[in-house]
Amino acid sequence: MSFALSHYVGWLIVAVAAGLTTAWLARRETGADVVRNWKLWAGGLFAAMLALALFQTPFGRWGAWIEIAVAVAACFALGAALGALLFGARVGATAMWLTGLGSAAVIWALASLSTGGALQSRLEREARQALAGAGANPAGVAAEGRDLLLARNAVPPAQRGAITQRLAAIEGVRRVGEGPDLPPPPPEVVERERRAFEAALAERARQKAAQMKAEADRRAALEAEAARAAAAQREADAQRLRTELAAVAVLEAKLADASRLTEALRAAPLQARRESVRVPGLEDE
Image (cartoon, rainbow, N blue to C red):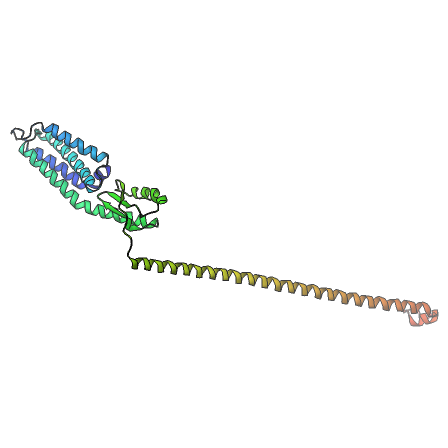
């Protein structure tokens, strides 16, 4: 009901104006009531329609039409009550009031026909978008008034509850019921979907193979780089070892020369040692 009051606000304002106008036209009417016990009939009919609207029944277009009828009737009665207070008119089942009631029925019909179709199309479009977003067949939902019919085979049973809640959350939807099963698709559609599925699988396999090859190439490049670095490190270590061995050999040669020189000096006479070792400043003595 709240959606009907907000969505049909323009037509409801017209209904209030119709009630005010009827009260103004009937302000001087003094005829007798055409229908006996009209208050009982009107009150009972309005109460029945209000109960149907509150319990959201019946399902489909008639449910939406009853909601609009309740809203229009309430707004017409509001205008009639205001007009009776302003203009001093008597509310009754007179000819003028029956004419005003007929104008309210026309307002109800125009509101239902002018906005009901557009609202139903919008609800069906948004419901199919929601169904497609959930990965289900969008053709599995149809709108009837403000209600939605969801085909039994449109979604997997495990996802039906969640998708039903998503559809019920769409603005303007009253109820989501169970619709008939979708017919099986034509053979050419099945074949086209099979080929598309196989092509998608092949593309995914190709992408997976390309990713695996790229990963193998990357690992091979890393291993080759590590092997080159290890070889370079081994070569550097070997070169450093050769350099150290060469330095050790040179040092050993010098030590051997020094040892031979020491032995020679020990074996030579003192004079020869002096001649061989000439110390500056001692030659003139």
